[in-house]
Image (cartoon, rainbow, N blue to C red):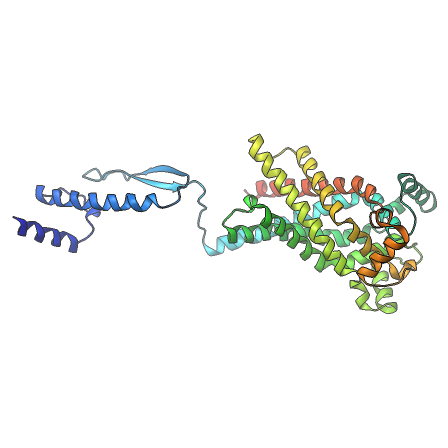
Length: 383
């Protein structure tokens, strides 16, 4: 009896897996099969106990017309599982996402900077001069500029700003989405669920990438903001005169303080905005905030980001305009030391910060809100 049973067990082990066979079996074979399956189930239960639990949802799969011995099976599907797309479909989707981010970012930057261009020009005028800043003096500059040069002169340099801001914002927002995706895949998180440090790193890398690619346009914009019309007639005239009279390397003068300022500014801005949206989802139960809530989140992000990086912003403006304002062209440390010695820390390195507290939250709020709403609109149109 025992010899027959062992022979039967060896024969069953050498054939196809028992779980696949569905027809009726002899009573002795059924006993052997049940004993073998019981041992497999015990081993599988012990293995699954050591794995981390994941949110699962049962899905019952069955095929009609197979009722002879075939039972319905339960398949567990992860709720956060993402569909595996063919390579060409995935590549096309990535290209669309990049183009969508570029377009949304360009529009966001253009609207934000145009809205605050007069305040931005006034701030730059104070940053590159030794005048003491106050709200009364800022209003006087705006008023006399309007009287002497006309209403549209308040937007002087805005064409150069658009030439710079449109590619800058497009690159920055698109790079931020890509860095979020890359860091999310590296750390095992999705883009919106990144932990704090990778979230901060994604913003800093995005700002650095955009600043590196568009810096000469920022310098041209600053030159046009602080000079009369007679000196530079248009953007191309600025490039020609700088390259002819001061050398091409002047186009990157002040680049290092710009990058050093962009790292905390962009990092903290994106970090604050993404964190506030994440907290909103967690506590409100709504997947998307309302537009006015996005504006508030963006204003907080701009306030924190610009306050942290403002001294370096003053230094870079001094270095960018040294050739036309009479200041000596020096290094970052010497420029900062000169400002502190002649004007003090608060009145020098933080000159115009109160103007930035008015301008910055408005601009960043408009920028982030426009980008998010454009992304939602483009996704809706694509679907």
